[in-house]
Image (cartoon, rainbow, N blue to C red; front, side):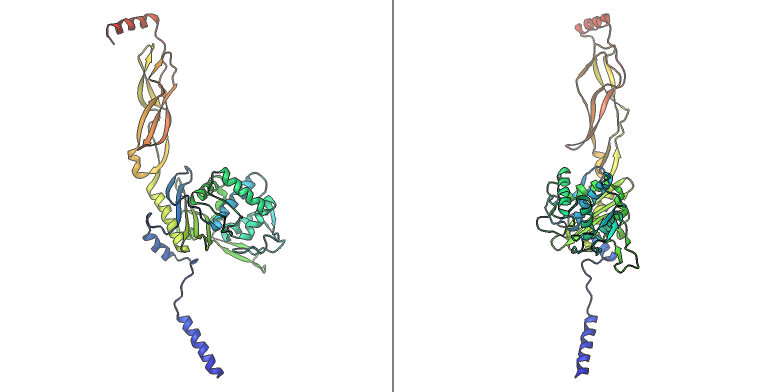
Length: 401
């Protein structure tokens, strides 16, 4: 009887082993990412909301439901890390500051580095844990070190959100574990993400690290951390920035990348799995790098027209454009840029000094003004003498120009 039961168990085990294995939604497969990428267009993104922003100009290059309020999971930590970097810049804390794990930090649910009560690590080590492992316990410990309690730190997060114009955002924790009442939008997230990249590029030391040890290898609680942002493995030029997942938020990713002089941030939320969030983020980044570029106007120091001068030795003075406008725009739109010379007044009255600002060159695309540069006088113009003006008046009376 025992042999028969053992045989049945072995047969069942063998049957189970022969069943096809379905990869988890969190798994990463480069070939699957490439397959998803190959069929992706700007019109069929699986993401519930998405945005693509050029970092240096803040221009939105693409968006889908950019103002839709959504749970954002660990994308929350972008604000957390921003405030940490800000605190470092203000000398409130340093990379070498020792951070002690409190009872609140110890045992925080979700992704963690399993901080023991009273255990201490430098802020630098904690930042690696937050960025590479997305460690909730490390985030709470750091928040407490800066503000005393997580609650006070969250107040700082919400105040900063308001200061930056993130009016569709509300934080209830520093980790993103809360879904109900804790929300943002991809547009708001792009604001804090671009500010982080612009103001504190040192964050890339942490965000693009692929793997890192936490604790000594001989320690019983040693952790080998692998970055969950597989965009770093897949996309050339990727520099970060943060992944996120909860059942309510779906798979989310804030992906940053730099190529030549262009820096982009692409954000996707509500993706069905990890491979989709990597593929669609990569697609948006490629869309930006392929279709947009910086261009410069070429009118600097060139003569752009003349303006009448009353009572001057001469009747007109030439004007020139003084400056170059740098524009970031769609490559196909560059040839459609128009320009208009706008003078502040119809005529000048002598005397006129050289390099007097008397107008502007306005550059436009369709009805949208792209920018402007000043227009100045190219020479001085003295006032004509009494007899010259009298003679000019007499000639004018007889209709002679």
